[in-house]
Length: 180
Image 1 (cartoon, helix red, strand yellow):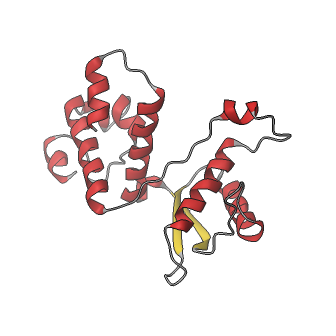
Image 2: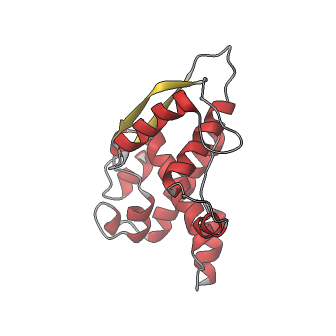
């Protein structure tokens, strides 16, 4: 961000939020040319790759879930969160310290915290049920503008969602999102 902040009117601490950056409907992104916003996005993706971070994205096909005819359907966000915790738990070994989870402050934070406590007592959903022994019992919900790692996760999620759910009518946009 430093090199871009010097050229454009972006503060080094400006929040990197996928939708806000790409739509440029508010400052500081409104005054930044699209090619520079693409470059910043690409640089963040490269930094995530170079860091060796693991990226897990969990989602739920709601139509398929309903079509299976379960007597009660678990809310998609809760089910995806449960499966994501299983993946995080699987990254660690019992000989290592427990993983601490930091998540974006969201209006569902208390529900997520309550569900997580339930998972550690009764286990997660599904055939891979786990009590998540390798995950610290405290989830830290923080404001994303205070943490570059959360902002990078937002950009990864934005790009993933855009690739899988949006058909670009302009071939240049299609190429650019796959380049990022």
